[in-house]
Length: 189
Image 1 (cartoon, rainbow, N blue to C red):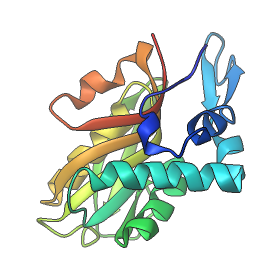
Image 2: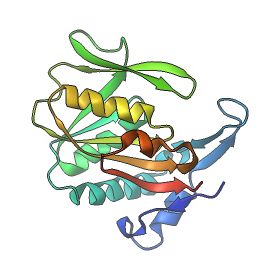
Image 3: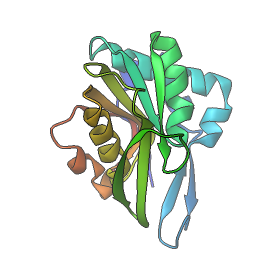
Image 4: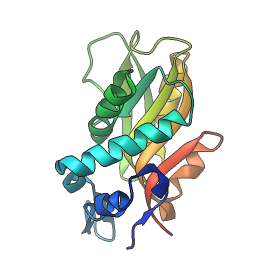
């Protein structure tokens, strides 16, 4: 599987490919026939993490004002929190069911291997806020779609849905139809 840089202009010269080479393909995980795209080596590299957060920040600036960044549990936290800090905004984690004290809003959704539920504190995302949704990998799009629905249930506007890496063959982008979706890296179909 070959990875590609989707938006090289978001990086200083040579930095995109340097960051990309730190993404590790793990065959047959979590099940046989699936190749897991492991971004933890990239996150563990200080320069690589800096480079991708800067790339996310440049991409976010193209969307206009952003009031909040939200990230999905768990790797969306690892990218969303430093991005929010870089943008000077707040960060709101979207958690798995049962992790937050009441009252919460929640959305159930289907995954590649079952079902799940995302939750957010009822008062965490103010109505009218311009929200950027961030996660590490766009696969089938179920988690990202649920995140957008949850943000909108709070009365906020999803200004974009940004990913570090997109796996084209899984067509997750189709579940986000009508939304502004960006991926920095990709696995072409």
